[in-house]
Amino acid sequence: MLAQHISEVEWQARCELAALYRLMAHFRMTDLIDTHISMRVPNEPNHFLINRYGILFDQMKASDLVKIDHDGHIVEAYDEGKNVNVAGFVIHSAIHHARPEIHCVIHTHTADGIAVSTQKDGLAFISQHAMKFYNRIAYHDFEGVATDLDERERLVADLGDKRTMILRNHGLLAAGISTHQAFHDMFFLERACQIQVKALSMGGQMTWPSPEVCEHTAQQFDEEDHPEYVKMAFEAALTLIATQKADYCS
Image 1: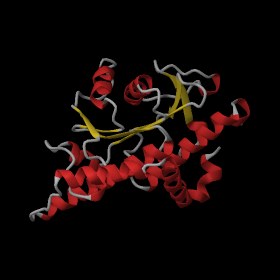
Image 2 (image 1 turned 120 degrees about the vertical axis):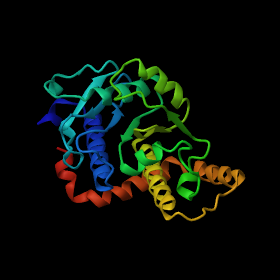
Image 3 (image 1 turned 60 degrees about the vertical axis):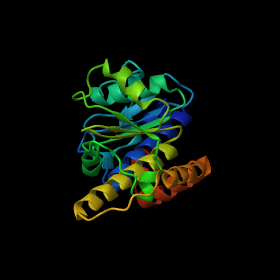
């Protein structure tokens, strides 16, 4: 069994990441075998875990995850023979390398997220969910499928010190100092995009909160984004897949 060959702390990280993959499937934030979630390996700042390419998110297990370095090399013998998607490596390695405080990175290709990413003005601050990201979201222009290593520098420069980003004509990205924070940000960002798409489809006039109200609301979210709160939200979400724990932690 794989767990016998690795440290307890890494195995727990693998279980948590596998659970996050399944939560993303539960909330329908998947794209067949594409898109990725990565997690920095505890006590190993230059290594991170990412999905074995070809496994559906709702079938992800701790043993399916692959430990790689910032150059995309598999670093443990027990992961040899597993495939890693190049685009996933490029996007995630860029952020993990440039932002040492980032623990988890989520990238999605949902229909609503991509729809908003095609809008010239990007995310519209018309909902409470969207206002969480007021003046707190970055944008990165589309350059094609992310397989060019040179794009890493531009992606990191565009992200700056922010945690969330819209990849134009591509999808969404959330980078958190914890798994809980990354999940919480992505959940709210995806919901904000869903609301925007529905609101635009109605065709009527929309109400637009003032910049002052948007900033006030964003600051309220900043205060609410306490580690204990986002952890509580993540653990509550895990109850939705509690019956799968023995499977994803294997």
